[in-house]
Length: 164
Image 1: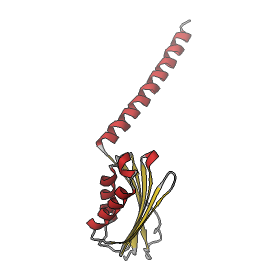
Image 2 (image 1 turned 30 degrees about the vertical axis):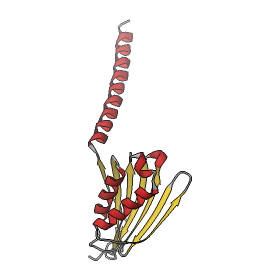
Image 3 (image 1 turned 90 degrees about the vertical axis):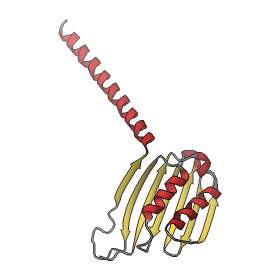
Image 4 (image 1 turned 45 degrees about the vertical axis):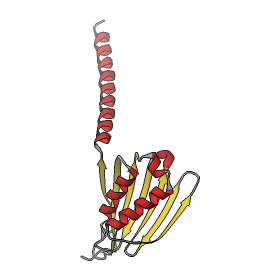
């Protein structure tokens, strides 16, 4: 089965502020990510908006679009590759390392899969750092504790009410 390309939508959460506030650092991150996959950046454009830094990088077999929101610690990236030798997962890992993201969520779509009716069904992948797992577990335990305490108090009140 021949697939024309792969489009990966990447959400990078809890990024290091200093790294995503600088357009130069973000440009270097894209250039390095593409260099790892043997792609030379042919053109790169950067727009600095009020609350967002927007970059577009084009290479021969790939393009990367990056939206950085420094006040949110969040970066959204679109990576479209149309050559099998260019692996979007490698680009994603390098972008994650470059911006110091704690949590990554990626959705992958195969483009130009002419033999498959489910062509546009995305596959989601999420990865967390160790610190992200600790934070998530702490939050779940806190919610569970509050729930148990609240239900326990209700049960005690009900039992006490029935004994009167």
